[in-house]
Length: 236
Image (cartoon, rainbow, N blue to C red; front, side, top):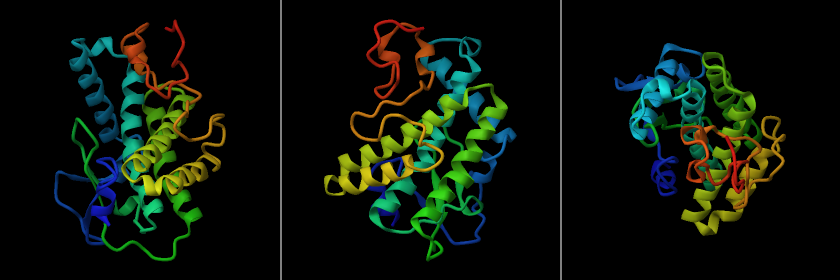
């Protein structure tokens, strides 16, 4: 299963460990990310510092909400892709937070490890509830508690992550494209994302902005391809 997921792209790739095992550092429990913990705060601060360094700016030049949104988008994308990939491949993966481990690395998708023997008999609806109810929603709420950033922005990040995962799976495995987009549509139909007016697909455009453009206001290259601001001539 890990090899099948990894073939879809780096955000899908997972390591594995025995159920109930406590991996040694640098592995950390994913539950640290589903609460407003010092670890999550440190992750946001690290993203802020990285954005400053990348742009030749000082940390104070980077708005905390921009760093929070960027950090949140990276984490929700990392958690969403394996779940969508597993659904498309019809291979179970155990995403219960208590058994997930991650490594707090900068640059690229963070390493993620899942138990080797997922519990059988979990329906697709239950899997979606697990992904959103126990991972994405708590993580989103935790980020919002740590840094004042709009729920609309954060849930737009989740929508963007779902669409991007489906798009990547479709690119890597064209034979799975119909299943990938069907999985994305199912997730968009759930209570968390049904407010997004644009359905998932190659032309998807989210209803909010991830705030990345704030790093270079007025520069069109700082606007993501699925952003609500894409195509506008002027923005701030």
